[in-house]
Image 1 (tube, rainbow, N blue to C red):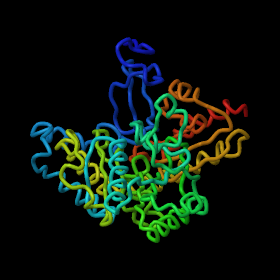
Image 2: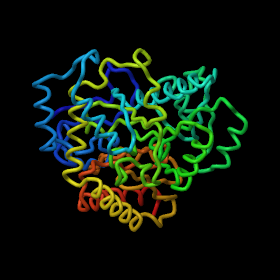
Image 3: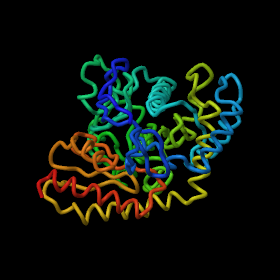
Length: 397
């Protein structure tokens, strides 16, 4: 019987960890070191696209590890070309740069936008960003993030960002009126850390139109909501638009660290040799993980599965807890759902663990569900059966 300490004396105290350590997984189930089983409705925070120990992914990664794990970007990496071509095909864009994390992908997007401005003679380029946004924790991505709590203690922040509210095209126009320094608009199609807040389809279309009119880059952060999570490869595709720049990460490698910036014609050739780079980005192992993840998602019809099972899960939640006083809204799409409660509910993560369910709480009062895309309707029913009593008890009904 293993014992897990609440904190370690040797790791930095950066996470409010729960007192469990996971040992192994199978499908949408995981087990801790003491042998207790959990239904994984968090998926490593939208990372474990194919669940755990997938019978097609594991042998492919073992094969790759036995061949070569890392090589320098001084040399060609064949699977980089293959993955870039596939992402271009799926997105309608043209070129990709590979890195290791969503933060790095977003940082690269910010650099692309600034270089785009400088190439057009703009000395101090500015990027429109959003309230409640989350783009990462580096100084630049933290500055683009719309959360004062995570920014506190890290000033001075990077300048060059204009913040606007979600889903308000007039506010966007007013905030940028007459400003010739604006070069890009940058947002998540569905905000993750900000509380699972979707951009409306008509708003996405309006922003695309404004960017076209003003020659701005439309940069859409699909780090958390992309890779099939909503039932399309990328969440903005529900609006029938194309971005100019699209950062990806999380689910692209099914757990192997990977990030990408995919760009269309307006942005694809901004970076030239020496402008940007990475040691680990695009390594053979991560590239194989990306190639295989997409192949398996296609083979197993997981986009349709995410849409169908996500709708089933949302319907079950609405039926069981949607009418409760204290449940403000159930929102999201596919297998990216948020349940907003009327008060902070962080205690529910531990209570869910006690019942054998892994979830997270984000934006203090939003229960976030981002399970693997292999989730079945029976699994969804089990999530509802485990979670609904906890919510009922919490809101006092």
